[in-house]
Each structure stands twice: as C-alpha cells, then as structure tokens.
Length: 298
Image (cartoon, rainbow, N blue to C red; front, side, top):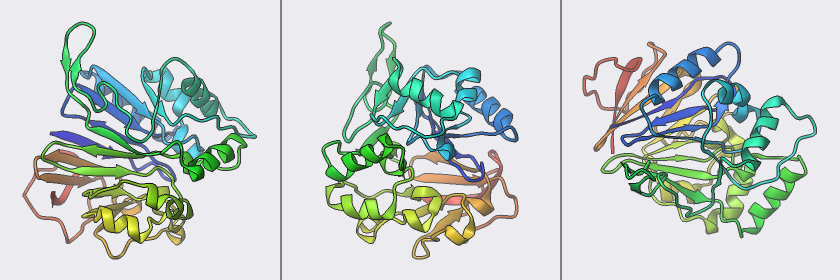
C-alpha cells in the first residue's frame, strides 16, 4: 500500500508519496506561515522511517517553490530532482536562490524522458548491501532534443516563463494505480509537443496549471490517457477548466486529498467533511485519513 497526499495550500501545489517501499517523495513546495508548521511536521512524521527521500521540483515559479528554503532548513533535501535548466528571475526570492543552489549543487538529479536511477525506478542493493525496492516513478517528458522544449528552456533562461520546462511524471503501483503529474505545462505547448509524447492510459491525473483553462490537456492526449479521475487544483474559479466530460475532484472545495493506494483500489479521503461525489464506490472505509468519500477501482 502507498499513500499519496495533495495538500490544500491555496494558489499552489504540494504533494507527497509515501511509497510501499523504502522511498518517500515530495513533489513541489508551497508553504507560508499559516501552513508550514503543519506540513513540515506531517512530512517529518511520515518519512522518518524511510531510507530514500527525494524532492522533485517541477519548475521554479513561486507557487511551486515557496517555502523551499524553510523546507531545506527544517527537513533537509538530500536528493533534488528537476529538469536541467538555467532559469533566471528579475526579482530573486530566497526560495528561488535556494532552488538554484540545489539545482546547480551536488545533490541534484536531472529529469528527462526515460531516465533511470536507483531507487526511483530501479531496484537493487545500496552500498552497504541493503536491498531497496523501486519507488515506481518514471519520467515521460521532456525530450531534451525537442525544439519546443529547447525554446521553453531559453525563455526560462531569459526569465520570461518557467511553466513549460515542467516534466511529466508518472507514478505506478504494481497491480494498482497509475497517476500523472504535469506541473504547469500550458495548453498551447502541449498542442505543439503532442506528437512527441509517448503517453499511455493512466487512472488519475493532476490537471496541469492547477486546472486552469490555460493548461487544459489537448483532446488527443486525454484520449490516450483516458483517465478515470481528474484532480482540479486550486486557482480562482473563473480561470478553471472543469473537465466536465470526466469524473473530477476539485481541491478548492475538497481541501486536502489523500489517496490510499492498494491493489486494484484507491480509497480517497478529503479534509472537508461536507464534500462528496457520486461516482466512487462505497467500500465502507473508516475515516483513517480525514473523511472517506469513496473508492476508485483501477
């Protein structure tokens, strides 16, 4: 069993995966003085017995790295994953400076389509002979030779936009769920790269750009994924695309979302006790992680 949590942090993204192996993964960071103590304490508690801990940064916009310096101070980052880039900003925050230090330092691992690493997607022994399982994470994008991606890197280098350097990350549980993260990839960019994407079916997707219409996944890509559930992130409602042809959970209303992933089932919990949906199966789970709203069969 693995646990995935999407924190309700307002206009930003932050997730963790408590793997069913000796791995713990955090994807992005958005913390402020109102939520940082709660989030930091939970991550410390949930990851304390894990031997491999990684932090994946999709891109260095404030809504994905705010609180990164505090995270490094309180929790520590021994493995920092990002795409290789030279992004700049006209007005550098301390969190962006921390991002650059981690990106360019000796703790980084650069993500690209098909990359492999112990114990991200490879099993094996560590230096002391201890066997560790894979985290089940694979990277489907970027193709670093793609001209549109190269253009996105150049724009990030010039401090113009960072959204389209985001990787596409897939988490798979053996005999269980497949989940996709797209960072803040934009609709027009995805239209341009769709013929260079090797994306297959997945059960759950986190809609790009917090579910904004500007990040709506093109139909040709959605048809390949054929998701059973789309998570709409937190952004002002007037900017959201609600993916009305799919089953959705909207984090603006649901609050924190926790996914308890087992073979063939994902039990879903939210922090808003008044939130409900009609498309999930009721398997009478207890409210172990906030409030149980149903089960997605995968």
